[in-house]
Length: 221
Image (cartoon, rainbow, N blue to C red):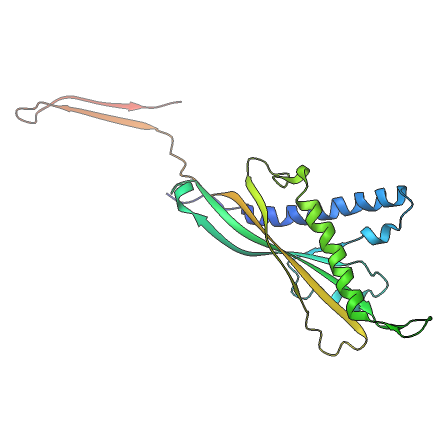
């Protein structure tokens, strides 16, 4: 007996990509609503990536788009043995990090003094984080659009961090991380029984083990 070809994504991969897709879709919707309300749609813009090690490097590649960058990446996974079975389904509790990166440049203020880039970067990251949290925790996405697969989603923590850019010059970058805890099902390949093709029967006498009936049958489903 051998396993069939494992040609699928595990559900933690599906959920990671689903989180990114939800943010991308709803960000576009928010920009449309903002424009209809005569507001600057750029303030609702986000650039969404998955599994990027240094997403803030995108600012160097495209310094004209000042939208916060969102990077969705899988962190860790634990299994609930009491709510799982050893054959097919395992209840998983995973953490998915959603990093929101904001940047700004220090500049002189025409009215006097200067505009600090670090404050601007922090406020930009927090604006993006606000959008992400409200989108993912809205009633529309109680099950992240994967009902039957996802049991529950809930924020675990929010933390700020400072990306390491090395020689960044006047560019200021600040990150905010939403750790989202998701409970969901993972499934494993199952044994596929072989089709019965041939049946052989021997009936023996209890007293002396003499065969009293012997028959062979070909089985055609």
